[in-house]
Image (cartoon, rainbow, N blue to C red; front, side):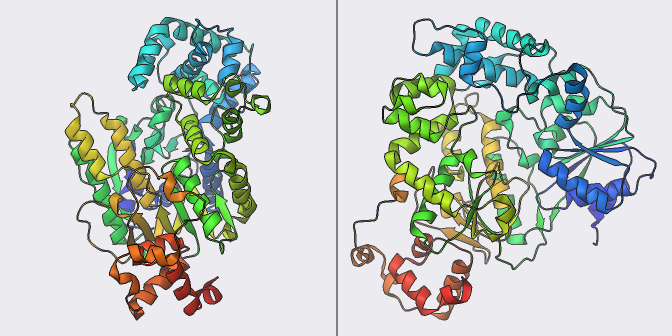
Length: 585
């Protein structure tokens, strides 16, 4: 492959460097070529962000015959150096709230479920410390992580106790009295100031590294290369920091994307420019040189699990021709909270069937109201989403999930899926031929309103920047085209042959009434009376071509109808007339 001048500059560089690489700019290829030009006797470590990236990178280095390159993740390095040495037993999943309450024998103060709320914050405090670069728990202020006033007041009241109990639980892990977590052994590795025996260390996805990971990396004597995309930082909620900004190395750029065309690049640039509403912003110049025409892989991407699940319900219940669907990251991960509670547990609580609830925390609640009180004191976003789904769909949920799972295929058959569903976090690093975005992302209008209605100190700029990053990551997953709600488009964004604005859906989080699975009581004739005059306009070749393209991309009939200002029946009739099912299904 022909390399760009930017890539050659990186390959020919010396000393510690950082590479700010835009989406689809061939950063892995660049890093491989960089490693390839180093002496064959050089000991090189490639630090991947997660297990799947590690596996892919290892394969690529082996294909190049580069046996002097060792591929690891920060956790795999820590595991080898800490777990075996101390004979620890590792817990694959973190401790649940009720388990912490039991382990520490936490008791309430007379208020409902205080012991569980306190345990929840102890768990979060430990995660905050383990991901930090601090030496002691006391060096951190957990209150800095809390934004909600009510939650802040609760934690402040119990702060000395929460901090003491967090230290006690960490001590139990350290002594091997209880199983350790993945966060714990990485932290212990960092605190041991390890020296890694390598000449070069290549650190990928640096924008989402934890301070603990970065501390290990920066203290090494090897020549260091850190690569990532400043604007793809989307794991702040896991205490990740933008390591590219913190590493004082010579900066190089990869600004040309080979994934998508210039119109998608222009959209990405314009979205990132929203950051100028919040603070001083250095404009980004992404060049798009992709020229893909395939429509084989089609994905629907949402900001939240809730938004994605609602869109999946639409497809499963209304788009009958969709036979196979796939959820990135396993279908079950969308119906379970990180703490272990399932959507079915919340539903059983809603129905008063506490004897059927498996999760101990949910089982301890008397009713849904108590669970909502708990959520208000913990900022548990995932549980809040589950409550919203249960309150809207109630006892339809088992049939809905069953219908989704009947069409879901396993990961090894992902290529057979008609549509792939994913949240932004789960599709990071992925790419698809065509994508459709759920309307649950931040908008430019909402940013302007927040800016106008808030005092400068009250505005959480880093959190809002991360919301902008989420939309940027989402739009840059496409190789070909994108269907995006008009409210998510930057103001006065020009028309583009690869960008299709979706109209007539409310901005913000998906509205349940829009996606209710019960059929609309209005007939097609009654619906057509409410549509503009173009509903009866004659079909032209241009309209037929656009309809064919949207159909081939797997866009929902409901969305096509809104785009054309016609009824779903009219679209279905034209699809039949053009024999699209016979030709393209």
